[in-house]
Length: 130
Image 1: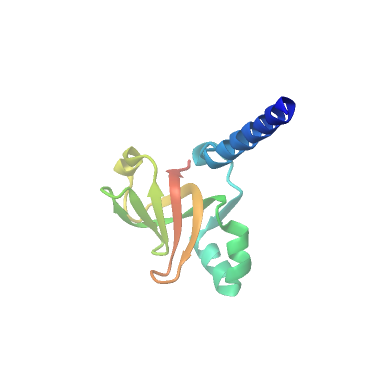
Image 2: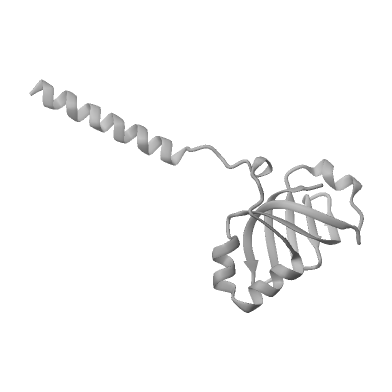
């Protein structure tokens, strides 16, 4: 009887540990990940206008590098708008100090998808690439 109880507790402990590791696994470090794709905002727009479902499967939650011209920047929100179609939330606010509207930029971040309401693409955990 004690042997069955000990085995049961051991199995329960392994399941609890596995559940804990599953729920509290480490966060992704987008800055250290290699970009899976490098596209311009215009190319992204073309792909989503042709086939939004396959484009979502291709890019969603992946680290991508996007390039275009800065059209707007908000230092208080750490947000950049690129080619009026991409909203990128930067991880490091100090990167926004040297940015100018109209300047060519390349940004690497996690692709969150296309927002139909605002008609723009979303990136978060973004960093300026060189």
